[in-house]
Amino acid sequence: MKKNILKTVSGGYDSTYLLIKNLKNENEVYPMYVFTSIDSIKQKIEYSVIQSLVKKLKNKYKNLHDLTKIDITFYAIKNVFSVQPFTWIIALFKTIQKEQFSIRFDEAQIGYIKSDCAIRYLPAIRTMWKTLFAFSNISNNIPKLCFPLSKYSKKYIINKLKDYDKNILALCWTCEHPKITKTNQIKNNSVEFLVEACGYCTPCDNLKETNKILFNNIKKYKVIFNYNECLNKFKVYINNLVKNNKISYVEPGLISLEYANKKSTNNS
Image (cartoon, rainbow, N blue to C red; front, side, top):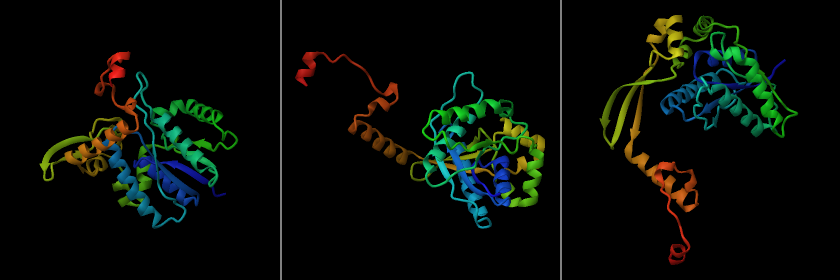
């Protein structure tokens, strides 16, 4: 029976394989990317990769829906090795909440494989999922949270992707901490950064161990930073905060504090 699947995508091999697996099973698939602002370069690359993957796959599969981007501000917490499960289930929940009157999702899927650290915590993640709905007004419509790749290896997934489409395999990105290898000053007061996979994070190590040739051929990117554009956007942002009396959202170090006694208040 065909299902409506809400699927997290990251641009990596695992989520891409699971996306294609669902499409080939004729499920209606709704891809979703979570933007957390923890690593802007990494997420810029991932989102670009996912957009390319979705565009390519939509030419073949009519059951692939438009990509949804969810913003979740979630910074690292001390003594917690990964906030990824938190961000993903909250983003999945937000999408379900938003679409509850138009789409009924049968499953929400996350593509953890058997070598991922999160595998040992799947019962806790499922508990968080149910708890999130228990505190909401849509507790009577909880899609099943699934981890369909939990028994699959990285080698198996890469081989399957290679058999399916080598161009899609070459598009995937896996690094958690992209490194800047070169910086160039260019015109228009901009700086160009050359970026490639770091080679030392866990996903990079796993890929090198699984398929070193594939790791050596991961695409490299250029990131352009424009000083003037950044300053202009920052000025607009600050002006809006001041205009709307929202300066409490400014970083603490950017504001000072003084006593406002009755005399100085009247004089003002």
